[in-house]
Image 1: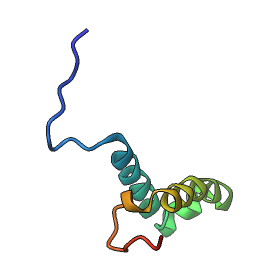
Image 2: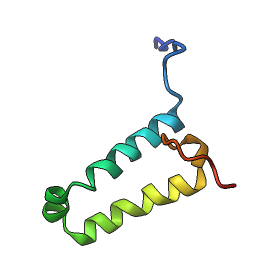
Image 3: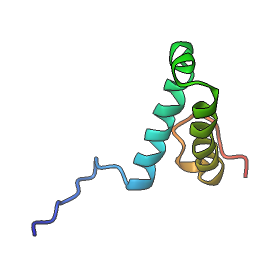
Length: 68
């Protein structure tokens, strides 16, 4: 098996996951998508987003500094 070589521009998996969750969070703020998904699914989507953001604030792609 050939292994992929990482380059300095590659994101580590945790940061890449944080960016994916941040994109989902931004998409979930779209009113049309909110109507299409419904409140139940939106609530389920927000739980992993907020959990990850609280547990790993230093990885979350935002300008807000960590509170802890």
